[in-house]
Image (cartoon, rainbow, N blue to C red):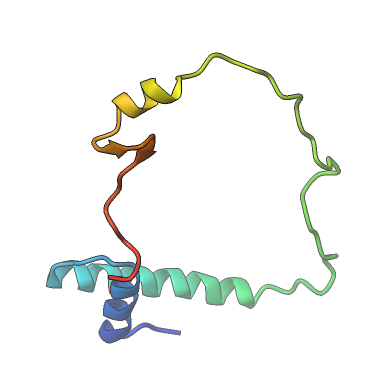
Length: 96
């Protein structure tokens, strides 16, 4: 499988990335190399390998919760560029 320049531009657009022309060519080559490696992996005979969900037998190996000192809400807001009524104000990114 190989990606065309237009497909690379479409992937960049979906990821909201902008590149110079020479960068597009570089990424096209790199993405095609990656897809080539994936094609090679698809050729590996895995018929004798049993399906595997995880690599070890540990299940839900969780630690106990520990209460540790942290910032108060007021201290956290001091680091925010903009806040209102105890909430952080961030630029709109959805629906643009």
